[in-house]
Image 1: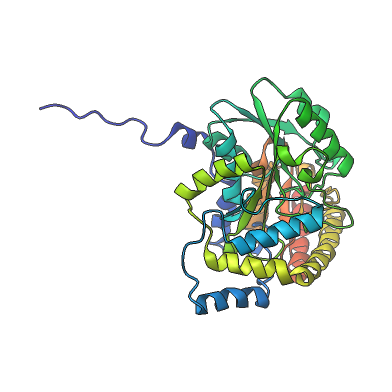
Image 2 (image 1 turned 180 degrees about the vertical axis):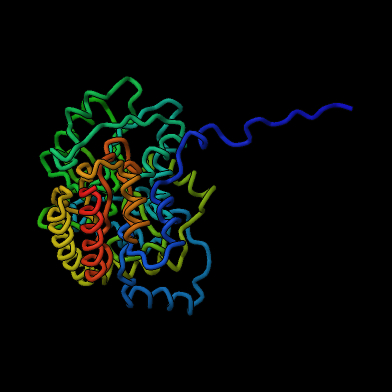
Length: 394
């Protein structure tokens, strides 16, 4: 009788190479504990505005339950083209240069797979959103992390980027306003990075999902910088600004050859974003700006309270200018970020995310999301203060 050989590694080496999400680890843990105040998962506590929900309901009533074009509904792409031109002066061909994706997460995956060959390098800020490096690895690329720090408000330096460029460098990954730090890049800083991209003939993938959520500063879309539209894959969506996380609608804007490559992958995997979500997104663009402004004003109020509260506790926190995250240092407690987050959850029932989940430079920090109600933020600050005082007295 012949012996059937055992398959030693049944899962992909690339998949084994990437760690589980540090965010989901704590999300799963807190779901089993009662009485938790969550400053963890980055999801607005607002409900999707009624007129947006109503548009989706009406679309269902009219029988809109079918597939759309792989590129997405023409009406949505038309609205996006109008929006990007009006907001940033960017002119995109709605037939060839815009793609509707299943959230920015899919757009990120498509972008990496569309441009990377095995061994190509992508420069990524550290810390940064947990999906950036894994998407590079899954596309066969290599992540090259560039350190940022609290001394520079976690902004990426063009000189540091240039120092990490090799003959294999293909792209620079930007995510500003930043998750997890709340950092925002100014125009002059972005222009210097644009000069590096031009000099070394690099593509820039710019995740601008938090573009509406800025406080007292201007959001500069990287593609709007001189000469950068042809080099930029602009990723955006509706989840954060319009409180539409579960609708899973995003978009990519880039030159036609890149969008065509992304669409090839998209058509064989997701095929299209849900039509009901696309119909809701049309309504969001057409009539959602007033509601967005109200939400941004409320986030700004919470931002100031949580940052002051954390600093008063003794957890040094720079002022985030975008998104809805504070990123305080917990180094004074002499705990690792994971130990701090785990013990805070168990002892005081407050959930935060270890900074180490976002890269090595996130160690010594935790991410606190202030997209939750003000009373809960105030109670969470009381609990965190009690926790810190208790452990500093030991």
